[in-house]
Length: 252
Image (tube, rainbow, N blue to C red):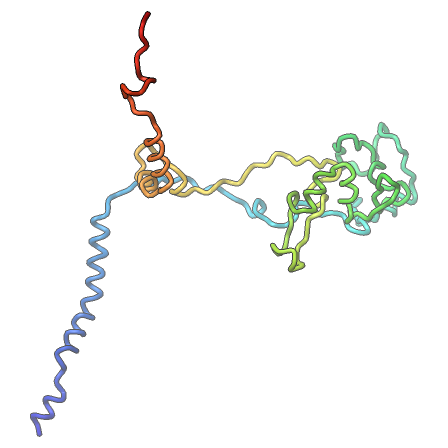
């Protein structure tokens, strides 16, 4: 009975081997990692200082805040409606007369050198069209379209301006920024913009005459192999005596 009990508590040979193999897996992987680290060749990776990009340069908000309906402007630190003053004081339509209000406005809009080119004479809280109709300030695109027809067409189709929200118009969450959310209506030309820094990765080209990464990139580029083989196959043989182009001209 005692011999049978001792045999039942003994560890099977296969279980012992599996336990030993489990102990050796960790050291084996560690030794393999050390081998890969010691056998790899040294490569000087090109580096460059990281460019500074401010949050204001990558914001998705509209560049400007357009006037709404009714338009509210700040005068003397107080929010005022346009008609609060223009109902009391009549505007003298003379371009050479110096302004005493709205001195922060710089008018550089081509032939539109008068306020009444765009603002309605009787109701300054509306914009006037060429046929005499008026529109509210959020519908300023109708006014701009009278002179900038091709740009207005591109804007309606999404080729000009900025569209925010969903990609698909069927979702119903798209919002096109109106003209005055990007352009100053009195001086619409954009100032010079400094482009954001481009990506700086090892895949974008050679950094030196003996760049290891460039050699690897060219060796793995199937298009470069195809173009070089095609150029070699179509190039004329140098020194081919059977080619009439290589025959020397006879002197007479």
